[in-house]
Length: 189
Image (cartoon, rainbow, N blue to C red; front, side, top):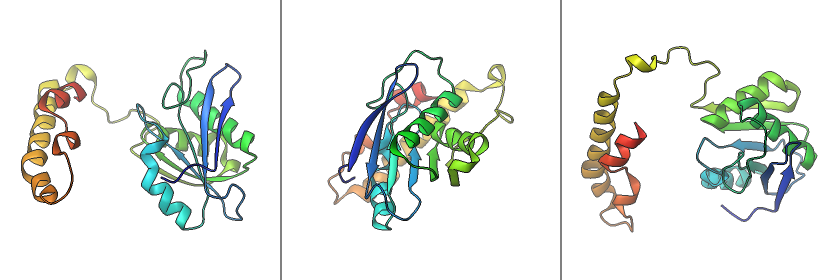
């Protein structure tokens, strides 16, 4: 994505430094979009989406969650509510009253919590891969770990051997970087 027009570290009450990035004009007349990433990621995963949203005339605010990307851990116990409050602290520090929220995975959970706990700050929510309760999740003793590993490995092999070579024949793509090895798939499962 294009360089952020504003990059700041917002210090929380427990000493965490939350890295916040503003892309596009910081004070346009349209409601900005807040982008919240998933666990183990950083705001850069939204790069192409940031460019599209900016091209549509909207400012994007993105942050790196605690202990991820350029943000530090702080001393408070990690909870989704704490990370949701971090997003509010960033909005407050930037002087932003209301946002559209796009959240993925953990960021999607934070988006739902923003809507629940700070409805006056949220114009809309797009939450991808999010849940507020684990209902429907299989209890761990009943989870078929071997089956999950086999499925992950089969999909990795399928895409690696069948789908990508056709797509990447003329492209400058290292197929090995696109999909997990069977060992990586087993670790993820």
